[in-house]
Length: 208
Image (spheres, rainbow, N blue to C red):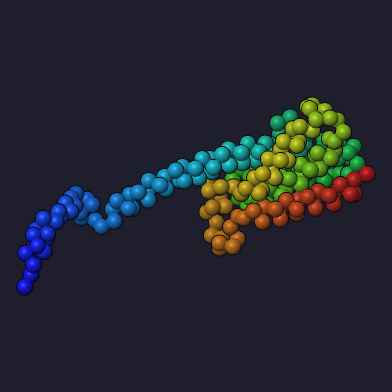
């Protein structure tokens, strides 16, 4: 026979108020809303990171492409292939005519690749290697411009930073159907910088 005390306790136990509104209709709504709010700062940080990389890519890439067009086509008051060949001869490079074409193509295509974020590690390696040669030619005049290397050093470090960091999501590379192992990683950028440095060193070794 049930105890009268147990019946009294049951009758006086307060019940939880019923859920109302959207939370009553959709289980787990409050948990999902909290998770979405927590994800907002991370999404904002990623967007800021991508925007910063885009700005840096455009500044460096278009600058290098403009220098390349000076060498190839004489645009922007450049010397064209003839003037660039004379420069390479004076700097002690063999096959100065071929060097003028290679340098112009490397700066133009590498710069455009960085600007668009297309094949970014290779584009960064091309620009990085070219700028290492520019640093070597300009070395010895101090740090500050116009005789010093501050401009070339700044561009070289910017190219290295982009090659290591990758282009971000606002880039053509993001649209390429690459499998996950081939998407940008720090190791890819480091390997690209080594490749650019080796190519630059090989050219400097044959320079008289």
